[in-house]
Picture 1: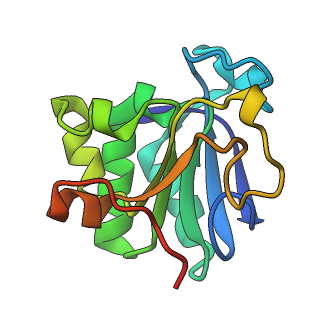
Picture 2: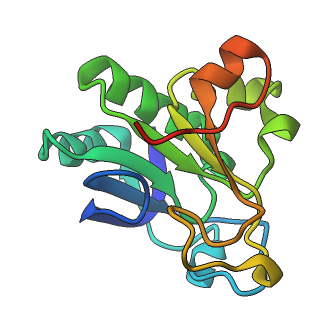
Length: 164
């Protein structure tokens, strides 16, 4: 199984708390005006990377958690589900996922349910240039939410992530 990847950044601190390995995937249909990463919109951009290859790179740093971003990883949900499953099974690292979709619109869709079983936090919502705020942690605009996925699924209600 492969994922179309633009780049993998190591030891980044902007895509979630602590040091993280961020996987920037190719492909996004949201095309948000003002997007900081418009080169990620191309579904044919980057290169194909196997889940095995990405796992080897992720496990090189035993202390960094993982972030899926892009582009929008949910356009490659099946492959990211397999990667997330392996990360949790083999390392139990914390996983964040950025998407332009709203959590309540996708949480019950079959192609995403298995992925959400392995995701700790989702940052949802399209980037909105009119709500841009560079002072917000881990997101670009005030409409975007940082959601604790596991608590939200258990409580059947959206629960915002809180830094502990």
